[in-house]
View 1 (tube, rainbow, N blue to C red):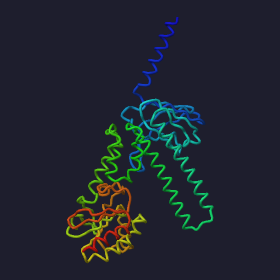
View 2: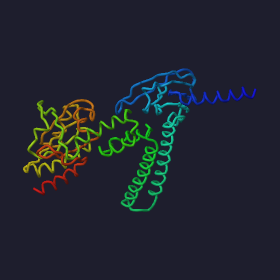
View 3: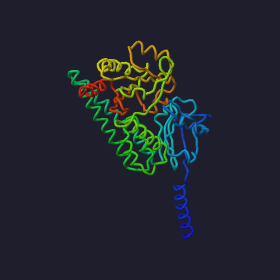
View 4: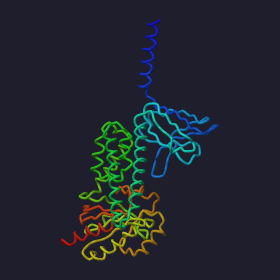
Length: 370
């Protein structure tokens, strides 16, 4: 009997090892407070505000199960239950993922069981605690009898300190495992803030994720930014003019030009126009041109803003829906507007800025040397 017992124990251990090495992404979910039958949807982000359903399963009395095929692994997905307003996020990876929560507070649901989902929960908890600490410190600071200027300075310093702690946490997570999709995702989700050389350094931390969607998209974005960085020749393009014709960036060769991406609906852009008007008026006679390219899709709104803001220089627009996803915006890696480039007479990019006053300062120095 002892031999049989030993054999049974050994068999059990072997089965556990086999299960742990099983190449499956299995989700087991329990949502308290649900009765009857409904549907569960796995949603994949396809754009800034768009998601596609990649899987669907039934949830019965709060319980559901599903297995994600391997081609879906290596990404963060949203899990939507029925017609609930909120959804919860998880990372698809090999293993058994346990999701538990209450349907009335879906945002508090827990996702655990696999390495990246454990990291994801820990990261969310860290952010919650950091936000609570920041609120406590700001409340205490605002209660102090201090001049407003001192409070503003201290609040700015507090924000920087909290941001530094957040960045340190993210870096420590990313550096802990070069195979972690979650670690890569932390950088990917803030892709708008990285320069191409910074993205090169980030991607070098994840050599085994070269086939991952996030890796490929960051690599592609780095390559775009490389082509529109100071020292590069500005990529040429054509857009429509206000009278229905066409105008190209290369038509400005022989002059210095401020390439200005903006839109009628962008308040910071229209505020920055005042700075551009100032520098254009001052240096146009010395060879400075301005080429404003709008991301509008409504011609009437575009023309109205040009007239209201007194933009007397050359204008262009593709008049396509999509904003930063339009071809010309993608060509220049636009993540936000306003966005400016100063280009020399040979077409070489001299500087890249996001604020009108920074463009003015650069042009002041540039033309003071002439």
